[in-house]
Image (tube, rainbow, N blue to C red; front, side):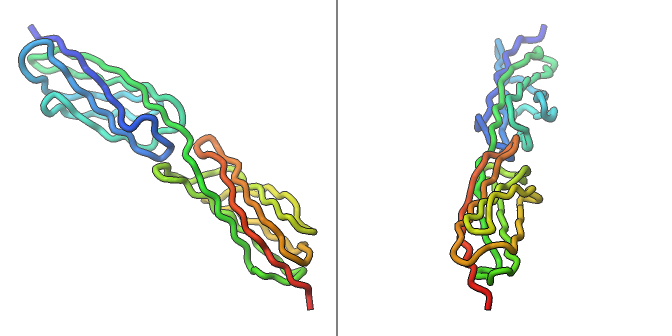
Length: 196
């Protein structure tokens, strides 16, 4: 008769941010002498199914690319000739990744009436990874400026204006966030000289 077992599943680190990998470890404890062998199948809600082979009664697998939310994990020990199958459970919590937003303008300085292109670049903060999506709100504090919402493409949003009045204009770019990435903002200044 096969010896009963208990399977424990641990998650490290937990919680994680979007783009960060997580390590799942299963420890199969025999309720009797000996060391279980064979495989553990990890079934992740909203994620992949991954199999690890026991060594010394434990196995670990690394899982990348989970979305924001709580993901239930079942670690199913499949048993061997001496030990019975068992199942352990845990939860992986994935949270939005922090971001930074950098804004620049070109040309700077410019001449009144000359088109100026403002560029905002949104980058995840490690250990978060991936490409933020959504929109950026540019706020240009000058005559001829205002607030402008632009789409983010491949992590970058741009705005071109030729209406700015002379002087030094504060520039704020606000990334509005998405389901995977948190909002952030960046600042710059733009100098507009009088036309000749």
